[in-house]
Length: 340
Image (tube, rainbow, N blue to C red):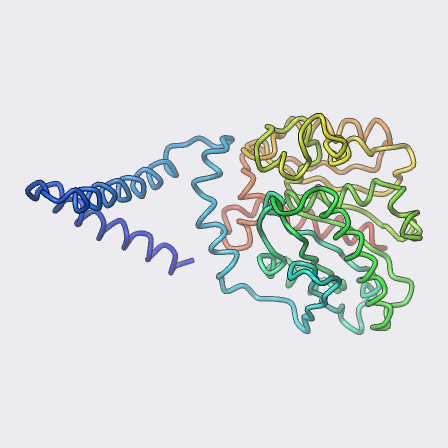
């Protein structure tokens, strides 16, 4: 975190000095040198514009989220977070992204037979389980066993590929934990952003459970943190359509968790979402929650945060105490309730 800020402000300083000298110098005669000088000045200007936009753009805008994203991702990748202990990397397929991290529960914990299967976010096109080391440490300290899958990413892979990865990861993990001595495992599914979408699609699709010969009674609940729970009501960006397919494609509706809600979905659902989310519109998630509450009353806990952005509520609270609005406490309390 400190290193990123140091490098960024050092770049601002030195490129600023360089640009000042270029502007004050005599015009270059060589066209190539002219181009290099122009590119240098433009690069400097882009750095300053990015910094200024972080200060002036209002919350609730996708542009406000975008200018904060590079620093956020760098911290998630390189921050000195405590990780869970005894982590194992287990492959469930041949592709480099087909693996999961397994964190065993404490041997003496009454919750060790409850497996939290958590899917990372990243717009279906980036991210990894390693970015959520802080969350793994937090949940493992509560006594749960954890499975944090990776999965293949867009644009090289689409909706069907990602759902296949979810299926394979869940099946493999359930077999693996039984080999580790976890008898009659119960599972809780969860995810952040795109991961919330993947977890919800699996939870609500009864056909997938049947096809995998799994009894859905082992599912004790699902949680979504800034999840993409109603893709049809989100801005139809290139990133989204890379995953769902075009609007007239068969996969478009199938990729929307709202489409799968039915009266048989009698498991608890926790939804955490900010009203200033600039990437997954609050109104879209609100529509999902309204349908869920109408279809299956009393299963939903919908916690909203008036000032929280997508990045803040999603994972910035791992490293920024100001972004922790109590979502960790809400999540832990809900987990402890549904896992009894």
